[in-house]
Amino acid sequence: MHALRGQSSVEFLVALPCILMLVLIVYNASLLCVECAAFDRLARSEIIRNHYVYGPYRQARAASYAQTHKVLNERFSAPYEKVELSSELHGDMMHYEAKLTFYPHVYKDRLGLTFLNYDFPGVEHRVAIALSADGSE
Image 1 (tube, rainbow, N blue to C red):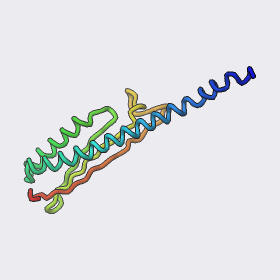
Image 2: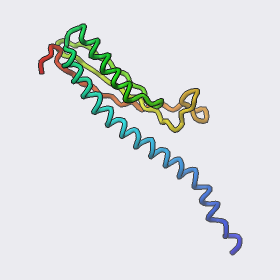
Image 3: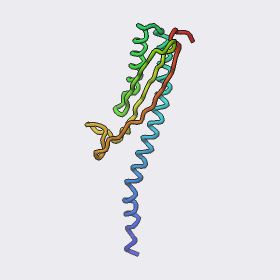
Image 4: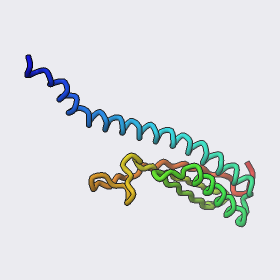
């Protein structure tokens, strides 16, 4: 009976790293879902608002792009997030694409995104929208 006395403690210590890793995975997955939902809402609303506020003309497209990029970078400025924005004119349509790259931030160290010499890839989330280039709805 005395030999089995500490068995549950040993089993718990063996299972603890697996439990902690599972908690970290769930935490990062839930953070990714929340950030992607916020990115969808903000990117779509900023692209549409700035496109129609600044207008479709060539000079105004740069201002619209700059303002949208600024707002997205301010909101998603965490060290585990990276925002990219692109816009192209195709005929009479203006195509915008915003991309959020999310890195599992629990593993981020000061020198880069490595953990035990393994480079973690980022997870990309994209929002694409096409608006009339002449300013009409």
